[in-house]
Structure formats: C-alpha cells, structure tokens
Figure 1: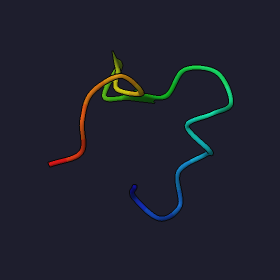
Figure 2: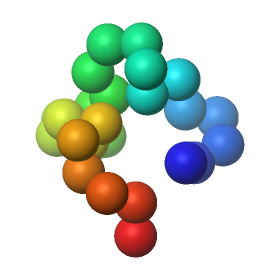
Figure 3: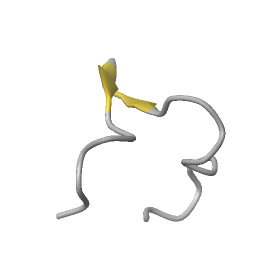
Length: 26
C-alpha cells in the first residue's frame, strides 16, 4: 500500500482517474 492514500477497504480508490483498488501492488 502507498502511504498517504485512503484505506482500500473504504470504497474505490482512484489514481490518475483509474480505479486501482482491484489492481495488485507492484
């Protein structure tokens, strides 16, 4: 997980307009 982002368990997470809460971390 990236520090400073909201908890991925709370709704969808968007980075650059893309939903990333279902994308595995690199």
